[in-house]
Amino acid sequence: MSAPHKHVAGTLQEILVAMADGLREAQEALNEVPPIDAFGRPSNSYHLPYLDFAIKVVAETTRGDEESAESPLPQLHLASRRSRTVMRSLPQLTFHTYEPGSPVNETSSLELTSTLSGRFVSVPPGEGMPIVRLQATAEKGDGARDHDLEVTVSNSAGERLGDVDVEFNIDVAATRALTNSGGVEFEDRKPATKLESGVVATNAEGVARNTLVFSPAEPKEATYVIVINVGAVSTNLTVTV
Image (tube, rainbow, N blue to C red; front, side, top):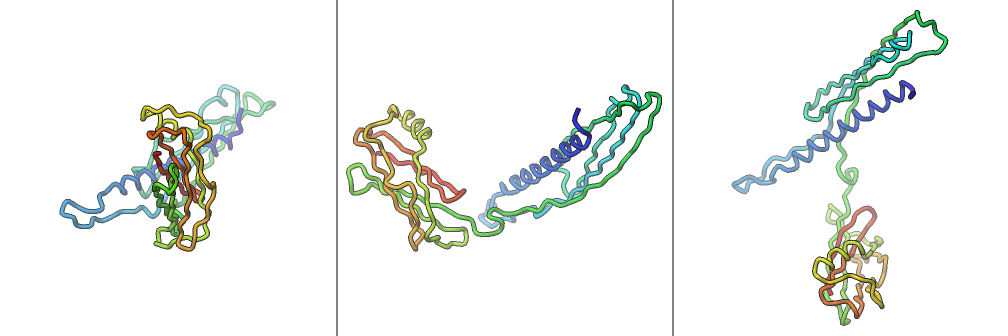
């Protein structure tokens, strides 16, 4: 049997996660408001900066015979002063305690009431700092089967980011699915289609250049998917022979 405090902790965790999910969903709904109205005029935008909440926990424990110990006693009640839209159906907290050796004809009860209050604060992407942006292009290179890849790394403040490592990888699963959908069977060929470099640092203008060299055995309809990463930010680029 799990300890009572574990039941309490688990239920509170579910409540807090449900409230956070509700706040995120409410903000996503607000983000769907068109930026301009039917006449082309800018519309108001809305952002939920925070959510105040209060959770009232009432726990009652009865010690006595085994039958009474099995009764569901504690309950949790949630009240939100900020938004009713984020409230979810809450699980009822149940637990019991029974100490072996206690006289079965002796009963005692204890009721505890606690109130937990707090605030969820919205944090924009990047924790308020400019976020990284990637722009990737591919063009036919000088070689018969070469394609030049160019990635520009900047941030939301419009700054170009130099000396940043850019990772290039071939997404084999996506390449197989995309190529097969075009009526061409994807398979490992000799020599293999490959990237000239796996990691390329950006120059002073925030640009990283790489080359994708197709195998001579690749048919013209073959399409490869290149995954480009800078830290946790990524973008995909499709290149056809």
